Length: 307
Ligand code: SF4
Image (cartoon, rainbow, N blue to C red; front, side, top):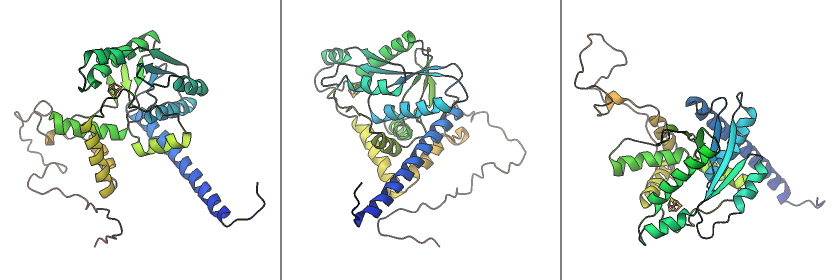
């Protein structure tokens, strides 16, 4: 250590302490949110053998990292098996994940299947390859889960993925439909869980930086990013910038659905609605306008005083 006093030293030390404190808070938040999602949706049960799907992106690294911590402190026994599917995309650095996974102590399996060539052969140049690619990937992952005797598959989607999906379905699919935190696989064989459901993407970005995960770029296949998803992501980030907390509020809304106040007759029997004759304090006033807390836009350099 240098014995020479410099003006910068106390400042950088203070900064270091601050970063350490922030990182500790971030870790606690990630563990709390993942733990909460697991409990709220009963994602993990005694004896589960969970296949953790690793793409090499920040989300899957973060998921595995936090699940390892959860396993250490969980009151129940369950197993994790990390799995990566090497789809033989050009330039895929195949040594990175095995090297990283070997340091985690979690059993892992790399499945190598050249779906890239199949997709290239079958999809005309310039057309989007993602639907065939993900269909093939899904089938292979089910096969691997079966071989590894896993009963659950964990995916790394986070809160912002879920919100984006909700808006994509609404804008382009005409459906109020999001991305469930837990579901039965389409072949009926597995339970699929999303333990990062409550985690904000920005926290995963910070965690990946802190942990220095060896991220594998997701553009190796050369496929265009889904433009609609990019737009939905930009829209949500802009809203959040202008109205801090909006993403959280929208996410809470996904957990507070009121079918009687939507218009889906399959969810609420509007046709056979009858009077009850009993006043209900919490009933719909129908004539009164709903009141909401005032949203204050956040504009740089502008202080808004509410009176
Ligand atoms: S982005 Fe590439 S790897 Fe991902 S689903 Fe599309 S084609 Fe497959």
